[in-house]
Length: 168
Image (cartoon, rainbow, N blue to C red; front, side):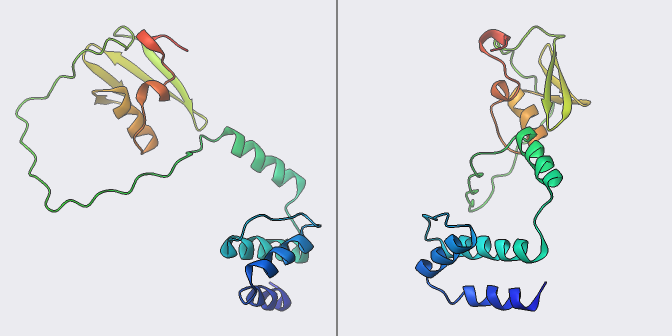
C-alpha cells in the first residue's frame, strides 16, 4: 500500500465525526452520509482511498459478487447469546432409543423432501417415526434444519412446508 494512503488513514482517526462526514462526501462525489458512526466512516473512507489509489474491483468481479449475494441464504438476525448456567445438570442415561411421536403436519412416510440450500440439493426421507438425512436419524424437521444450517430454525419453514405437509 502507498505510504501516503497509510498516513491519510492514520490521520482519519484524529478527525471528528463531522469532519469524517465531510471527507466522505468529498471522496464519494458529494454523496451525503447520514451516519455518525466513526468506525464505519473510517473504514469506508479508507476503502475508497485505497480503491482510488490502487484500482477498484473489475466489472466482472462486481457481477460475480452480486450473483453470489443474490444466491446466498443470508441470516437477517444474529444468534442470541447463550446464557451461562451455574452448573449443568447431569443428563439421564438412555436405555433404549426414543421414538419420535408422529407429527400430523409431515407428509406420509416414504416421502422425500428436497430443498436447495447454498447451491446443494438436500434430500430428507420421511420415516414412520422421524426423518432420515445423510444416514442419520432425526426426530423433527427442525433438528434436520439445525444439522444443515448450524443454527436453530423452524424446519417446516426451512423446507417450505405449509399446513398438512403441502407446499405453500
